[in-house]
Length: 227
Image (cartoon, rainbow, N blue to C red):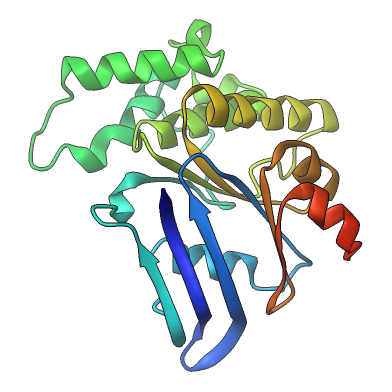
């Protein structure tokens, strides 16, 4: 099933075009990696896919019944203050807030979902730990857990491995692949790591203020686009 379609789409700000010529689809179960240099329009495209920007031209369409509330989002700037007095469980559980409406308290179902997501992410034993006490890799897993509590369909992640050492980054990519395959969560990830994109993604979108490539990792290697 096709979830998102961009057709001759252009995104930008105040009439200024940042990225154009977008023609691609995201299907349920895809692991799409968006790659390109700094300033190539990757984050602008993500904002368009999150419905935070309207196209300057063309269109972006979503399948019937799909709403932006169905997306769990981890931005590149996601920060939890080091002195924020919250446990790992509290932070993961907070991802469910968007679906609570006017209800002031978490339900047993939402608490159970948070525990299940923590188990999937290998952080169940950190439940009572303070976020500030965790390593960078552990903190990233907690934030992904929070994003998972907001969705059962799609995760959008902007440079989730930024700032991590190579080992922690590799563990994170493996974890995202597991989420994609075992939890049937569609993943859209912005990354500078071409090697990881080719290894883990099912589709690659290469942009440089326009669409340069869209296809499978094998096709991408054969196209020899690179940077």
